[in-house]
Image (tube, rainbow, N blue to C red; front, side, top):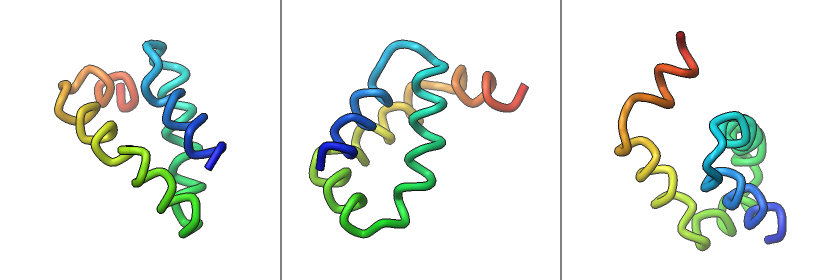
Length: 64
């Protein structure tokens, strides 16, 4: 639960570098069912959806 909360806080941070590192860590931890359940219960999916819907600036930063 603590790991999910900390990761979610990092994903919600304003710094692009912190978000990118958190998303990389999320990719690794998401295979763990316990972590995934906690992350989802903390509205993690809604947070990720807002990031995707907020535009392409993050996607552009990652790929270019």
